[in-house]
Image 1 (tube, helix red, strand yellow):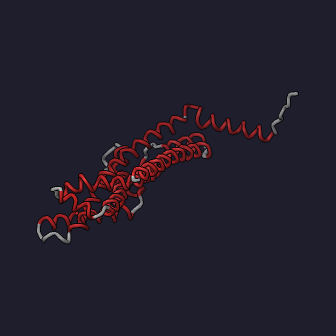
Image 2: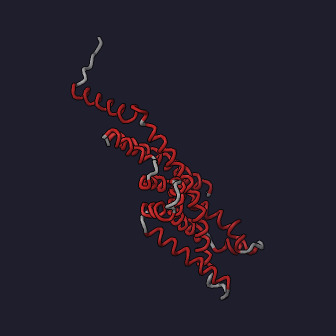
Image 3: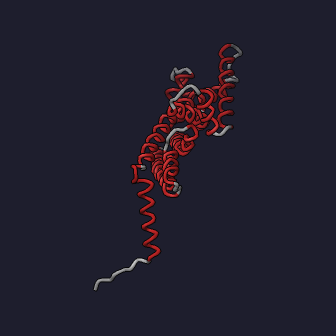
Length: 252
């Protein structure tokens, strides 16, 4: 006996409406390409901003940790004055960047500092990279300060000066300790780039908003953008979890 299931009329109409909405928002005029192209821009800005943030963060972390560790032992002179100046500049940078919203920094970068530039992607990379650098600096500095003082003494006993000890002994250990935190910073930065539309950059969020402006339907495109962000974040969160597990196993 064949059992036939009659779908309720309201459910049939609802599914038909969903299908029409999907076609209108994504299929018609290839509107899905706004989100696809936006996803590429989002990942591009995030990747290069993370690289810039790590570079700035390492420099600032070394300056701050060096000042904390050896400034008291240094004799008054040119070297101590330079270190004190660099530490003051670094503290100012960290205070300003961490104390102001990233969207305001992005707009200042685009409309004020780089007002003559038309390269929105480059401006976004610089703005997000500089913002990320302030947080990466504190992450790496905490990693450096967590290294036992005996490691510095071991480097000195091998004939290394302070810089060589930092490069060959301290930084690799600190980087390993803070690698999961750096990976989490990448995830945070990925979500922060969703405000790139404030400068007219057609990232993924802006792509969804463009579709909404064409179809006058907000639910489907914005839900799609949110779902893509969720999938990406879940993927990288899983990678961070596996990385943390692997690092724990390697220490046993």
